[in-house]
Amino acid sequence: MDIKKSVILTFRIFEKFWGDLTTEQFNTIVAEIGLTNKDFDAMGTILKSMILMTSGSVATVRDPDSFDPLKTSSWEDIARSSLGNLFTLLGLDIAEQISKQDYKTANTLLKKMGSSNIEMSDIEAKVGPDGFSTMKPEKIQISETLWRGLKKLSFDAIMLMLDKKDNWDIGRAVSTSEIEDVAYEFATDVPGGETNNRVVLQIKNPKRKGFRAGRLSKFQEDEVILSGQLRIIDWSLSAEVLWTGKNIKDNTLQKRDWLDITDGKLGLADANIQIPWNMEDTSKFIDDVLKGGYTISDPLSTEVTIKNIYNIHLDIACEYI
Image 1 (tube, rainbow, N blue to C red):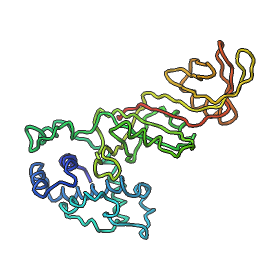
Image 2: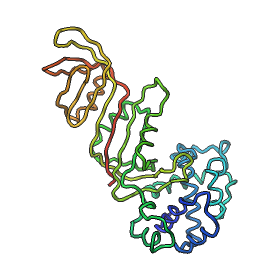
Image 3: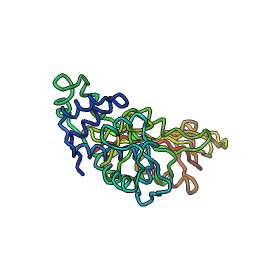
Image 4: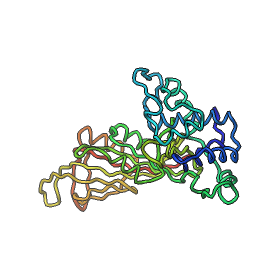
C-alpha cells in the first residue's frame, strides 16, 4: 500500500485535535484535503499499525509469526482513550480484538511510513493563511533533527557501531523523538547501581523523513517513526574504567576513572593522561580491555593498564540519506 501525502497531512492535522475532534471538524478537514472512502480505509490501517508500534507488542510487529491469539487484546486495551472518537469517525470498532493479520500489516506498512515525507509547499497549500486552518505550517512539519536513545547494550553491539564504515540501514521502523531530553532520559533510565552501556543518536533529518506518531503513541507525544539509511558523521565516547599502573614517582596505583575519547584524543583524568588517538582503533581497544587489558602511557605522566571498562556512553551524530 502506497501512502498518499494527503493522508499523511490529514494525520498531522488530526493530531492537533485528539480527544477534541468533533464530527464537524472531521468533515471540514476531510473535505478540504479531498479524502476519498479509499483514503479512509488507508487511514484506518495506518492508525492501527501506529498503535501496535507505539503501544502494542513491538516484538510481534517485528515477527508477526510469534503472535499468540490467547494473549491478544482489543484496540481499546492498548490505545489512548482519546483515540476512541477517531476510531468511530473512521468507522472502526475500538472493541475489536487485535489479530495476527493486523501485526502482519503493521510489519509491512511501518517501513513505508517511516521513510515517508511531505514538502512544506504541500503543507502550506492546505494549512495556514491560505488554508482552512490557522495552524502554523512549521508546527505540522517533522523536525530536521531527531533523537534516539538505546540502553543496556552489549559490548558487541557497541563495537559493531564503532566499526560501521558504510551507510547504516536501520531498515525496519524505529522510534525516535523530536526532543533531545526524551532520548537521553530513555537511554539513562535504569535502576540505580546497574551498569548501562548506552547510545544516543542525533539524526540530522534534512529531508524531514518519518511519520509522526504524536498522540497516537501512548507514552510520548513527540515520537516519530523512522526507517531508511543513516550515515555516521561523528561520535564521542566516555566510559568508566579500572586501571592499574605506576605514576612518575613509582608509586603503585589502582584507580577507577573516567575515560574520554573524542576529536582524535584519549584522556584519563585521574591518570593525567591525554594522548593522540586513532578513532578507528576504539573497537579493538575495548575488545583488548575485555580480554585482559590495554596499556597506554603519556611520556609526561603515567603508564597504566586499563583492566576493565563499563558504563560506556556513546554519542553518535548521523545523517538520514
